[in-house]
Length: 220
Ligand SMILES: Cc1cc2nc3c(=O)[nH]c(=O)nc-3n(C[C@H](O)[C@H](O)[C@H](O)COP(=O)(O)O)c2cc1C
Image 1 (cartoon, rainbow, N blue to C red):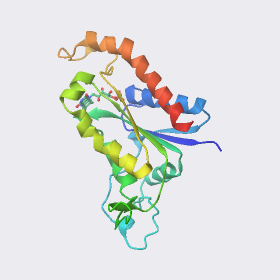
Image 2 (cartoon, rainbow, N blue to C red):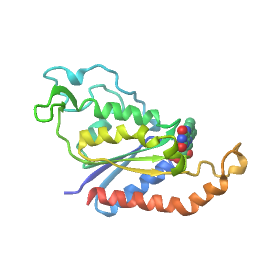
Image 3 (cartoon, rainbow, N blue to C red):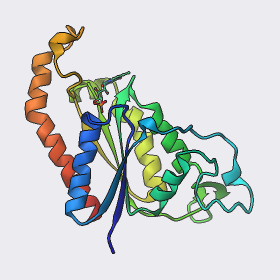
């Protein structure tokens, strides 16, 4: 049966770094035979978790799907029915964007059940949904600065929560991305443009290739 992959772009830019990484993932998945849908969140009207707790009511029929009805809900339903799910986001002020966070809240919280799991002694889940997932982060920082400012620690919980809910989650980082078409036209003297250009010429093609391979791997 044809596998289905849903990809979400949580960058406001529809054709820049994050979008291009996602397009490469999609290409890899499509070439491996998957049916893919890439959705840009920027024009969608949705909120984060409203804390209505409809998904925690005893006897609720949510089945792990957020009860709050807005433009995101049908998309969440699609994700829960997919075989693979990828979300990409730029890093803004050391964190994923608000759009990314809203999706994480609305996708993961309805699956979490506050009842005790007898086997693990931890919280349980309303559904046992297994699928391949991945998170893609693009950022200005270099790998060295990523370590220095502890981005690994900041970003780790989202990967862990995705693993907890869906059984797997790979992470792909793209560092020191190209932000403007022409740096000479922007106030950017603190930026080492030569170093950025080096990343653009040498690292960026490798990042796109890694994204392509990730897409293939996820649906094979
Ligand atoms: C509001 C804003 C805040 C940002 N904050 C950070 C940051 O804290 N760390 C970082 O490495 N890059 C930061 N960046 C750079 C972006 O993460 C980076 O350019 C990213 O690749 C942009 O993705 P896009 O091309 O898909 O829009 C910021 C960019 C913007 C617009």
